[in-house]
Structures are given as C-alpha cells and as structure tokens.
Image (cartoon, rainbow, N blue to C red; front, side, top):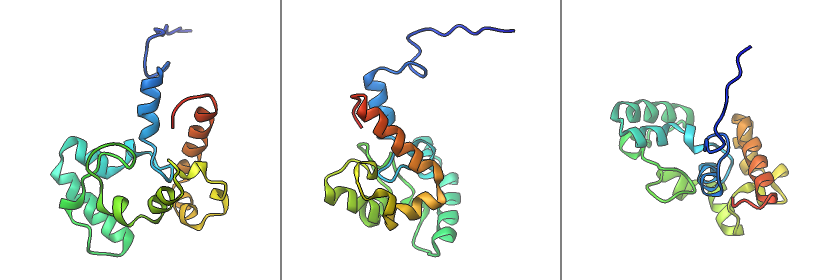
Length: 144
C-alpha cells in the first residue's frame, strides 16, 4: 500500500477563496465548463489548426456555414476577455440570465422546466451538475 502525502497548501486540492472564485467563473451561465471548451482551448493555446477543426465541427453540429476559424476566440463566458460571438450575442441562455440579473441558470427557480437550458443539459449532462455544485458552494458562502 502506498500512501501519498498532500501538502495543505496544494491549491488544486485545498483551494482558497480566490482560487475557488476563479474556478467558479469558468462555469458558463448554462453550466458548461469553459475550461474544457474547444474554443477556449484554441484561444489559450493560440492554435490556428485547432480553430479550423473546431469551426468545421461546430458548423456541422449547428447546420451552418457561419462559424469561421477567425470566430473561434473565447476566454470564457463569465470572465473578462474575448468571447465567441454566438455565446456573447446570440445565446438565448446568456441573454435570459442577464435579463433576470443572475450569474448562472443555477439561481433561477424555473431552471428544471426551462427549455433553453434544458436543451444544453440534454447534450451535456455535466452542465447541470456543475451548476448544482456552484449553488452548493454559494450556500457555503463562496462567490459564484
């Protein structure tokens, strides 16, 4: 049996309030984890080849030819920086959250019957769990 000792200041395992807030901000309004979003990864790596691949994939998924490699730039839905145009200007979930004055759909009492966010949750089950985790953190006094 091997026992691994962990330092109490290991921010990945025992994050402080600042680290938690930063991690929480990487959860989009709908619950998708921006850390794993292909547009954000391509942006952070400044990877033009990945932008081409993502644009092609997203065009096929969304039945459009309007997503170009040049449009694949995003730092995250709820953090400062460049945003993917669809997410910042056309996303019905983002618009709804802003109109209601919420940070995320997790704050909305109608979230479980909402067709807008429900469509996302159908395709990304992790998103609903992310919002539930954020709500728990909020109840414990951490910022969303």
